[in-house]
Length: 376
Image 1 (cartoon, rainbow, N blue to C red):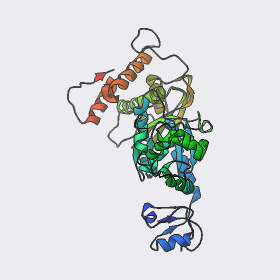
Image 2: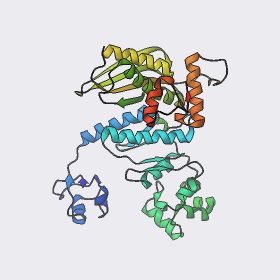
Image 3: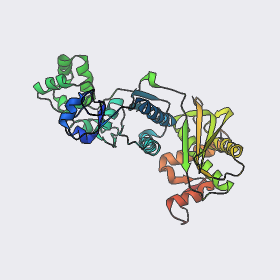
Image 4: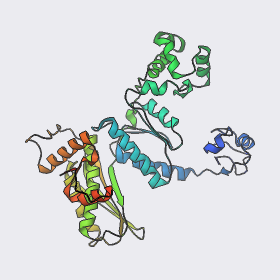
């Protein structure tokens, strides 16, 4: 399948092509007539730019649920800064959730690369296409890059690749043979940067102009008709509030607006917002606001099939970190949040569960055995 050009493949240019068509040599920006000659059985699809932009914006909103630091470089490519208090493993976990949500909410696959720098993440993403998930952990950068062709480096086109080949350099790992001075002598300042990159030193970061604080942090849950009581609905809300709040704390954000969105069996939806007196990242505060909104939407909760919570109007938490196990600082709810965050950071997310969510936690694990995890 080829996107772009006329339906008969005689006019226009190729915008994109499926991997099956690419095997025949079809590439973006190629005249449609040439693509047709290379792949005679290809089906040419007319472009629908309005639809592409709509879906791109939808995916962009998913990004902003995880971080306000988004640099979108094209309609189908973006860099996200997922740096947070959970460290590199937390970023990997969130990247997996982003990939899953894109598939669930748009039906599209996405290739994801996770690394300590932007350029490395881009190469990792390309390396895993289609629908890949490639992680380059700290300390593994040089080893990951070494066997790749020099053309994998951003900015290394056919002419630069040919120059490398004249020097006997075909892979990124072989660049180290030249040394930084020789690289700078041959390629200028760009050569010095490429040398550092070949050693695994990726200095690229998400661009400042791509940073936004107008995003939100959200979570949602779909379910069947088995939940019929307010206790069951509030159990779902508490779980969602905890997911949103813990993510906000991990990223160092507070939010001033709590939003609730519901969907009914007949696909109708409704939403309500509440602006808090003070910005928060507390699970209990977000839960109470969402529960109040739920009762405003419906007195019975009948017919709900999906609930979602979002925290928006974000700001950086400038307060000092809570002494998790000390007697001072914060009220009891904040101390509980802090203790749970610390335990999860050390032992994993499932190491501790709130007592009110114990039934849901056991159902998820498929066991009614005596709980060995901690309760809060």
